[in-house]
Amino acid sequence: MRINFHGAAQTVTGSQHLLEINGSKLLLDCGLFQGRRADTYERNLNFRYDPKTVDAVILSHAHIDHAGNLPNLAKQGFEGLIYATRATADLASLMIRDSGHIQESDAEFVNKKRARRGEPPIEPLYTQQDAEAVAGMFKGENHGVAYEPVPGVIARFFEAGHILGAAGVSLEIEEKSRKIRLIFSGDIGRNNVPLLRDPVLPDVADYMIMESTYGDKLHNDPEKAYGEFRNVVKLTVERGGKVIVPAFAVGRTQELVYDLNQMMYSGDVPSVPVFVDSPLAVHATDIFKRHLECFDDETRKFVMESRHPALDFKMLTYVRSVDESKALNERKEPMIIISASGMAETGRIVHHIRNNIENPKNTICIVSWQAPNTMGRRLADREPQVNIFGEVYKRKCDVATIGGLSSHAGQDLLVKYAMGVKDTVKQIFLVHGEEKQAMTLKGLLKDQKLDRIHYPELHESVEL
Image 1 (tube, rainbow, N blue to C red):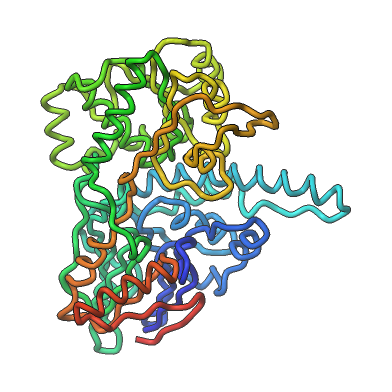
Image 2: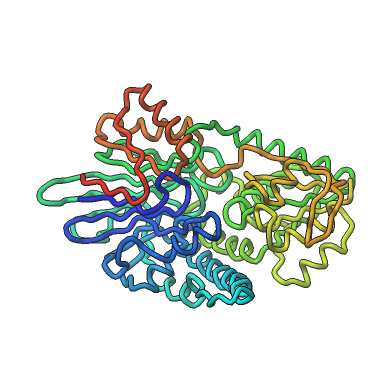
């Protein structure tokens, strides 16, 4: 048996691990590498193996850095099944179609520049049509139910608690009379977050491929984040302002909606209109509503007691049309607008910020990490003025930053996750983490007498 680390190796993006077992090839995730435009196109276009030879894919969850290159894989000859939880299959189908649209738009933008330089055009990595073709390749499976993706491998999903449908993968492998238990963590979630069940921690494995994204960082308590968000809403509404929230369309938006549902039901904040203004977020929420089996007991209890759905309540409106979105900027009363993108770089959120940034009654609420050089980072840094659509706007509104809302496990839970297999594991491979984070985690595990840790390089191949 061989593991080939073709993505998320010594970085946090582009998850892609190819297993060679009994002459078959089984791919764990097929994500897009995300980085500088000059680097990403060629890297995502060219696989280090022939997609025609891949027999099956197991997908841990729907985020683009785990699922986003599936259309390209199929476009280049993959014809097998893609195994995922039922919720992941639905959510990934939506997200890769949206990604296809982005690939087409990006290629159009780049080709305008290439044409001015007299260079030939490039093709999009894949199109919406390519993405739609992949939707029929998904095979939905329930947590805990055994399936055989390739001969000699019995696989089961278990709860990851990261986003809707996210799962770890347990593989029972029999090869040449040898039996191996391999765990693939996917992205590990957190305990006590809104909507979703807590992650299940493995207790036995011979080998484990494990994420290390926050191996150097402890997270704030989710309850503290809830309290901070509640205070931002309360103070802003009481002074007659709007709360503008840039939020990622999948996961973060739904968590915030659920939090606001609870706050208004309990009377902790005034009941004011709440608008979700992002087409992808609206469609994703429709999928959330179809998969109540993914919700935790606390959410189910709240739904029963309040007698309305977790992601629908009286003051909430899901905005679908552009005209509805524009109309929000004509309204002056207090309200909450949640819109994408999460780093305030593109989409409808940019227009909402432009229309509200110069009003001191308003608050822009930052609820996730912001990459350098994005408008979200400039707002989080509270810069006095911001360039929007080529014009300079003075920031007169308040800016609030809410920590503790990450959907990834913090350092303490990562240590606990690894220690669960300490007595049986022969090797843990740390992936999906930068060097500082992974090495910090490795050092903590070594302190706990778990020193069988390897941090594989990109395209490294390991024989088990």
